[in-house]
Length: 427
RNA sequence: GUGAGUGUAGCUCAAUUGGUUAGAGCACUGGGUUGUGGUCCCAGGGGUUGAGGGUUCAAGUCCCUUCACUCACCCCA
Image (cartoon, rainbow, N blue to C red; front, side, top):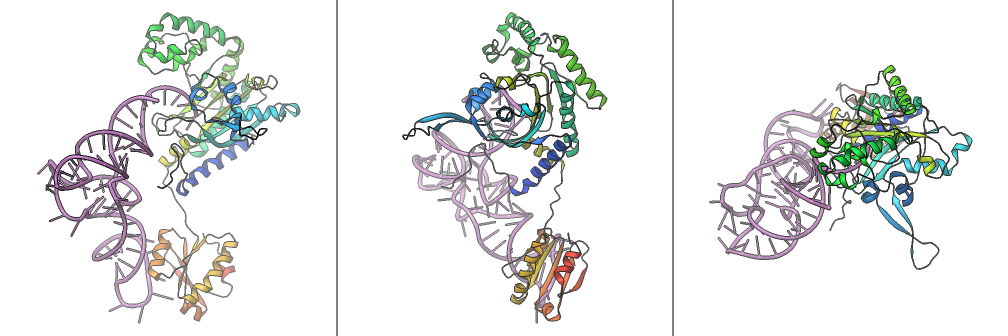
């Protein structure tokens, strides 16, 4: 019985790793330009961190977390200890680290980014894995609308740098502690008046999180909430000013967006500006980046009252988009050394080693193959050039160097061949 | 968690109402007058038909069970 990987956990095979590295490299470059610094945090945290920050009634906390009991180190009988969870998202951990290291004491304003695996126990489908990867950023310590716009511009630059022009930005404001409760009451009253036409799911959570009903895809709920009060019309003065500035900055920098007052984020900690980049090309898992402002979160996790705004991107979804528009130009070895006869083989092996030590991508066969066979393989592996060495060449003191694209081939002296090959900067 | 669909060679797929030794293309390996790639020609290797059970003279094909994968709902990055 062969052992397989577990459901929803997949290998990223060498053929696709190039795309991943491209995404990561562009992300690092753009983050650095915006003065974000990388932070690396644990993959496992205490369960309480997530239940407190993400929200007890969210699907993530209610049924999607990988949670287990650690062993109690103080007792010898392996009694159950602290409950731990594989992180389902990155923001909670970053904020925890920010508070734990007391970063705010030196300077509250910190811009951080992270990348790595996250875990949610959902039914896998296209663009949705149980282990998936996010690249995210958090700007802590700033409540001004300019940082909201900065984060949105960063994302916009990132997509442009990757050559992704199709994804579109949806924008909303959820209000703050002053105006959201009022809106909530207004919406709740509206929903209660037509509760019987809502789906079971929405009725269940109408008191805990009435905003979700706006987001529901059930036709009954869509119909019932058609004339529901809009959050954007219920914002308090401060929130309206804040959101107005964010939009002005986007217009002035030519970032296209559409307002979506029904967009509700899945995590409880969001307030004010929220946003989501979606694509039509990935089926039903269409969000490739999403985030927003979370002004109460730092305090909620035991820190001082410090605002924050951030986002996360789904790397699997990004790489899927890239692969759809790319004709992968995979480059093979710079030099493929073809040998005929054992003498030539033993001469070539140390040469290959010395070239590799000089960072040249070089390949050669170990087993005897015909010249034709080796040439076929050099072609298959996409070698840029081929060095042919046989007993004849050894006797003459000259090898053949063939350029695989121009098909030109020339003799090259064996004396000082290593320096000669390196000087030519093959590949 | 719910629903639908699909499992035959590394990949994409064939195989008559159940009927000989399960085929093809691509890929792979070798060869095409002694040592030159992509095109072409020839040959070869590769399968417990996802797994287990049942019906039958006979199962890739019918029935049951099970597993895996896929997509959608849900949820979300």
